[in-house]
Length: 305
Image 1 (spheres, rainbow, N blue to C red):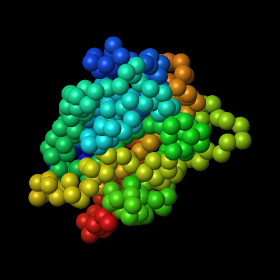
Image 2 (cartoon, helix red, strand yellow):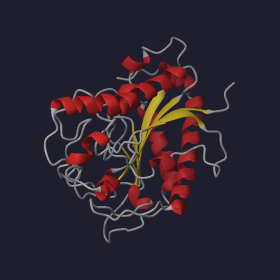
Image 3 (cartoon, rainbow, N blue to C red):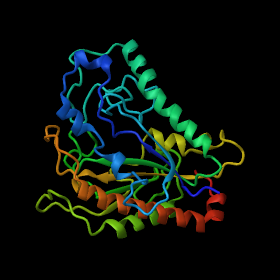
C-alpha cells in the first residue's frame, strides 16, 4: 500500500524561463517576468520538504517557462486572446512583444511548451488514478488585482479556495461543472480560515480590509481545474479509478513577497514566511484528505452538476 498522500499536484505558473524563440522580440524585461509569476509556488507547495512530517504527494507537474509567455492554465483553442495560452499582454495591460506574434509562432509555442505540461499531467493522473483522492491545482496571486484583471486594485483574501462555484461553493450554470461538492469546498475554506487567520501581510494598506479566506473569489478556477476534475475527463480514466475531487488554492503573495506592481524589484525568496505558509498548506491538505476519507460514501454518491 502506498504511503504517499493520495494527491496529484499541478503547479503551472511558477517558472521564470523565457522561450528562446521569442527573446529577440521582447518588450518586457526580467522584472516584469518576475512580477507576472506565481513566485516560489514550487516551494510553497513542496510537501516533500524536510521541515514537514511527511509523507509527500503522489506527484506534481511543473514547468520552467514563465506564465507571462505560456499559460498552461488557459485552453489551447484560445490563441487569439491576449490572455490566452500564448500571451501577448501582461496582467497590467502592457504588450509583451515589440511586434505581433504570427499564428504559426503561436502554434509552435503551444506545441513546444503548453502541450508537454498537459501530457505530463494527464500521464501522472492516469498512473495514479486508482489511488488519488484529491487533485490540487496550486497557485499564488498578487496582493491586489492587477490593472488588466477583473478586480483592478481590489484587496484579495489571504487564501482563495476554489471549486468553480459561487461564493458559497454552489453550482452556477454559466460557470460550468463543479470540481468538488459545495459542502466539501466550504469545509476546506473553514479549515484554511483556522490555519491562516493569524497571518498578516508584509505591507498592509491602511484602512484596507483583507479577509483570511474566500471561496471562489477573486478566482473560481481555470482550465486545468475545470478540465482535469471534470466528470467528462474522469470517465475516460481506468474503470478502477476513484471519483476524486478537485480544488484550486490561491495564496496571497502579500504574505511572503509584499505589495507588488509590475515594477517591484526582484528579491530572493522570504524563506521564513514561505516555511510558515508551507507548513499550513500541508496541514490543510491532510485535513481535507481526512474529510474526504471520512465522507467517502458521500463523495461516491455525488455527481457534479
